[in-house]
Length: 401
Image (cartoon, rainbow, N blue to C red; front, side, top):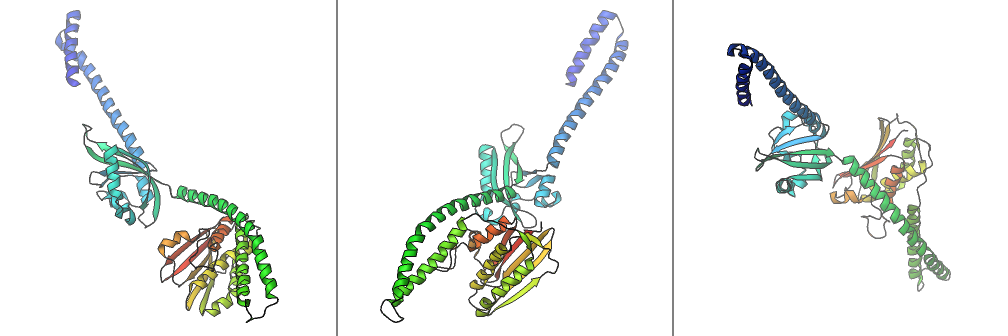
């Protein structure tokens, strides 16, 4: 650019001399002022370009989305403020470090790193890929990843890639809850239809067996068989009643409720069950628990279900603890035990309708799904933590208002 300007300047000097008769020294003085002006313009253009680059650099570095640049060895060369906020690592902690430290072990073992590299190398980009990542504090979050390749100046060789990661944990949770509600609604319709269809013939069978038993005494022929029919019919009737209740909409009637009193009532009612298995009961009920608006009967049903499940899980003596606390506008009820625990692969199944690990005839598999339904209707949440052979803890959180 500068050589072209010099050539044009010499041509201009010739034209000025020919048309004005001015000496070259005079012309140089005039053009010197022009040079100064041109240099000033070039500087402004250069500064403008730098400002332009800085503008886009600031956008990337300060974006609320996590933007991460990786070289061909999958090592971090760009880590913006959004990445710091999302994952908890400062820029200085990750620069030059292989990015797979953020990939959960189960996904590393499945070869996710290779998959990401291959996809970007093959197509030049990867859009809206959903996966999981590990934060500095160990928390696993759901993320959406869009990544594109960076090429050299000749646009022939890949020299790295840049990715945008967004936290979609809340979105995934809401999607899961929506699917569960849709499934529950469908299950409710099917269950209601089946329960009504079975009720009438079952009542006829049970009624006839009861009638025949009137003329039989214990030990007589067919007495045991008829007794079994009546007992099994009663059990099935009870299960059908539970199914019908499950299929109906849950109506919450809120009144002022003392959660500590709810816990005391439940433990008193379960006292006999505790004694049968020599299970020790420990309670730690906070004195500062505020009264909440809730359906007392439903909360009693939910917490009782968890306590009874804990008792039934023991094959020998053990310990169950009920604890209440309050903080940040919520109250918490924790029911924990030192029983056999829940296998890791079953944790995600326990709140599903009809899932049961108790075996035939020992439940409908609706207990914990009803518990979750009750807590959800109260705008609360329920979490479970368990370790095989160490115990299980259910954590119920309810809003005060």
